[in-house]
Image (spheres, rainbow, N blue to C red):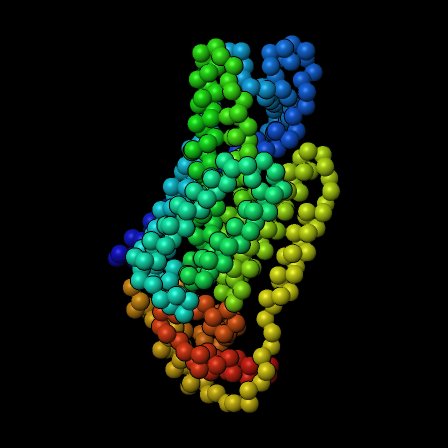
Length: 396
């Protein structure tokens, strides 16, 4: 019953997380687009009122006229809309999911004893330290003189992101490492909103209400963090779905794959932001495609050399019974899985043969199964499956 309740919590909070994330990212992308499409106001009266730019658009059968003030309007409207709870809800639901799946289930989804043999409390403590430390380091860098040159700062962020990816993958199982990479970036994004963007906006609003000219530094700081957030978005979205791609997180060089795909995502976002501004160079997008293609080619499975050994199906059945059916069965005995993951079961010979490709991919190529090697599958047992699969392919 405990695992069943956890599954329902997972379903409901994950659903909320996706809904809130769509709202947050959608608003973020829209305002980046809006800023990059602003034109000088046509009406001189608007310029006198302090309007810095405007844009006309059409959507859903209606026309919209958006204006942005250089600092603040002479008089604030009675109702002012804020964009913050989308970000807060996304982070709160995301950290709840992380705690539910990767901390409460640390022995299954976070710890891989073939990578590092931690106890669950130690592993969770390290994970939290990465999340908190990631924000502190980033925030200090943003306040330093290094942030004045955007290219230098971008290079520093890329180097630190690579170090983060490597460190997480050296400490945790690939799946848990990838998710925590995303959690660190997501925490930086929401902390930018909570600690910098919203407080700055509140100070600007308070000054306008007093009839004072708001200090533009708050808008400049908020803009800086907002731009950083937009480049973090696509890498975070990849990580949110990465648990489906064992070919990436289960690879020997999983950290390098992670930073490569993240860089491709950032390049794609750079292309779209530049396109908004009318700078139509396709170079960032081309580089992203080349990078993704290079990663795909580099991690493509290679046909292993024939061993000359013979393996009977009984040997394969014995390995699967010992290492796989505690979860992948019509009646799983592992407490973390009330039903077989993805509905995949190995109770009969026919089921094993049907899933031969998946068994080989997950236990031999990526080695991500058994998950966290909970059942202690040995290299010799993986070789049994490898040899059996190669024989199957040769017979076809």
